[in-house]
Image (tube, rainbow, N blue to C red; front, side):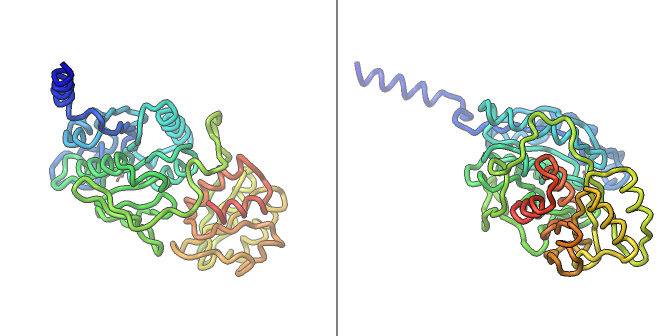
Length: 350
Ligand code: SIN
């Protein structure tokens, strides 16, 4: 009798769908070229981004069902040049809910590549879970010869479904490469190998449906951060000023007049500020606007009290964050404090 019962149990288990036991991966679609369509197979510029619904993205890659129990949801449908803090907040809320309710073990966000790095870093600072979040997209629309979206989506699901991806902060996965949200940036207007992490390098590769990692993520991220945007409907207003030879102070003056909460100065070299802009920024800082010195150079640390008298002027330095990432961090830092010394500590930890 006992043997009979065991045999029945064995037959039952072997008849379960192959998918049982697979991790649950939620795919949140937000638009971009991965959902874009052109008029010919050779059109790789001037096509329309953010057209296809999430169902079409999933239907194009049935192989993802071998990696995970996949569900799809259309969270937004935008060309990522039109990405907004309101959509960031919606994404963070949806991801946090999916993880806290047990609805998903991992999340993939499909996104336009133009501002993917900003959304990735925002989520890196606001998702309250060690579960994996991966952003992916495409450089070629779905209709193009050698479109990269389907393989990028397959790889992103493979990364999100794998336990080894956890506790690494939010990841960006395109072109078989896995980069960290804090470091990655789009470096080429058109080629599929556009995402790079500068001097600090990528975290790993994905091949044959498996990620391979070479590095840990050391800066504070996700569940360890102090930021909680659950109840937020807006974020502080932070703008970026660009430095160049002979820059007029007009843009700086207009940001001060517009009462920006914070200004990122994308300075030359080591975050140096043009002499005619410096008095405007000093005045802004004295009046309570957070002023962060970053660099347009793309790599390297900003030396505190190096090129500028930061202590004296109440300026904050951006560590090695690009101006656009420094903006994301300052927006969140300003939800916690307006004290420049405390904001500086945040920039040195995150
Ligand atoms: C976009 O960022 O939405 C358009 C460009 C792209 O996805 O590559």
